[in-house]
Figure 1: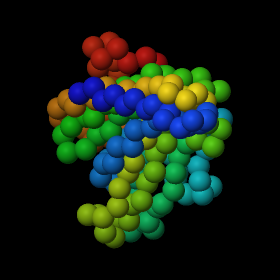
Figure 2: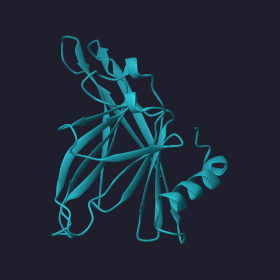
Figure 3: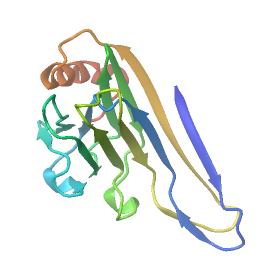
Length: 179
């Protein structure tokens, strides 16, 4: 499925803005983002969202039964234009145009993950998989566009980081996922 958004500045003056996609999934979705280093990650509030970054792939550590609720936002500069979520036997892969950090508003990340999860209430909460397009100044009547490509695949492997990353690496050539 390809999603595309166009925005036109209908004002009589310039406007500075960006387009973004905000996809909400269950809070127990295991999400992966290609990220080169810890310097490409910021969390608000600090330490609210533990994560793992290994072999160029970032994943959130989801709270387990008996652990406290987690609520916060992770801002990432991805090293490639995709992210993926795994839940209930499915892999959800979102592809987008990878942008340099300088193109994204400094208060944002090209990829943002917002988690509101409480293991004591598993049916409540959410995880937002957000993608920002370049921050631009638009003259009157100027247009900007952004798009995402969604792919959903069956997944019957182990529900572990290792299993998910192996599946993504196997699908990389078929889906043209960059590293």
